[in-house]
Length: 312
Image 1 (spheres, rainbow, N blue to C red):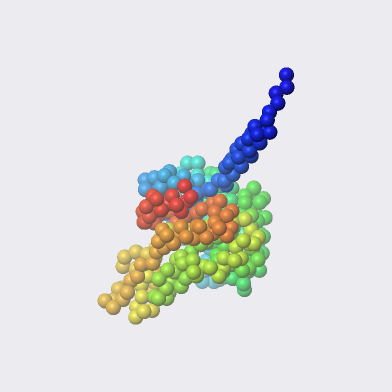
Image 2: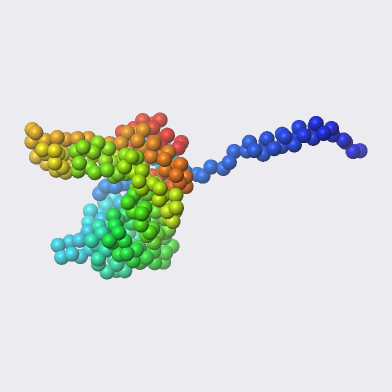
């Protein structure tokens, strides 16, 4: 038996089908929530553990050591990380090494081999697992870009031979340069102003200062994640002139006429940055990284602020 439908019913059913098909939510990219750990001792205490659990942190970029030059000009490791505790179970770990630009004048192939070998040894010694990537942090400039590129090509060979990926931090001023050889990059959305200028009240994050660099972001030819600041600076000025950053008490003799200023981004500053980066290059917020994980930093903001920053 054939059932005939009126044209009105057919139109109704078709419109319902179109409505239902159009109303299906578009799949959203999964946001990896990550942190940097930038200290000389790894100590995951109860405060850090609670933060990691509360905000579903799945990846840690852990500074393993710096590479500096010694008195003879050789590139050597410095401030190597000590493991007071282990890495949280199941955490993805990205060993990160800070390299001073002057070290790039050394034998870059040998330097890359030594860095990767040292990271692998530290992982084995300290039972660090879930490592599939190494990151290099270097404030290279136009004058050192070719040296950095050669070094990173050597790093790529060393990493890929061990089935590891390689990433590079990308500072805002580096967006104007050709991307370095790497599997991906991390855009560092902080240190936008001049901390040595007492008149600069938002040196860590000011989107007005960042704005001139952002037009290059959309077409930057490297896969990106983005790191946002949750840290603060205490800065000592004497007679209006920069003396230094105060990391702990009694670091500097303090005169009665000195000024100690606190510089820190507000939650609104960070949320604004997240929104602007998301509008200009949405994939750069597929992974949001907080810099950096220590108790003072993570207690600086309220839960509602972190939920907005982390797109929870």
